[in-house]
Amino acid sequence: MREGNTTKALRARELGISLRTLYYHPLKPDKDWSLKCQIEEVLREHPSYGSRHLAIHLKMNRKKVKRVMNLFGLSVYTTHAVQLVLSAFMNALHDNPRPTIFHSDNGSEYNAEIYIEALETVGTMISRSAPRCLWENGYQESFYNQFKIDFGDPSRFATLGELVLAVYQTIWQYNHTRIHSALKMSPMQFALQSAAAYNSGNKDRVQ
Image (tube, rainbow, N blue to C red; front, side):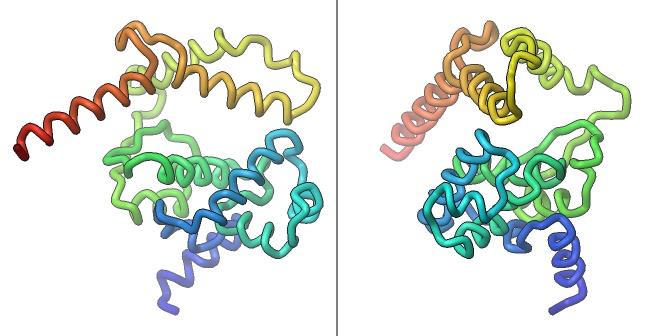
């Protein structure tokens, strides 16, 4: 194994993430992706579950569950910030085209070498806001402000699983059903409309 690959393998092992995660391609076997989604559903309700409890809950072989957890970076889920953002990025790649630019603040999780390597591997440019400069992160700050209003008091939840599920539902509504003043529709409706217009334009050029 070359020196560069050895270094990546060591970093991945420290985080409990498979090295293959860094080279993840959207066209993964459907069975692995399906199991990953099932595991995430259970973790939303029971964040402390490890591979043993998950295997019992899903009535599956523990080795298979553990392999998929390592492949997609789903183990020590509530404690490693880098692992969480890396898993979120891989999830996004599965259902969306590779982003040309990834913009974030200067949080340590986004500055982690293993996360930077993942972005560079898929050819995504890295953009960072200047320290203590909220003006460069206007859209993100606006999202957080609106999210807090829509979400309400987080102390109303009895368990971490309930909190995680509510966060997921609020973000889903934000993307799929909430009308945005600049778009006059939800982001998902806008994306579908834009894709239809783009495809229609391509057909016209071909003809």
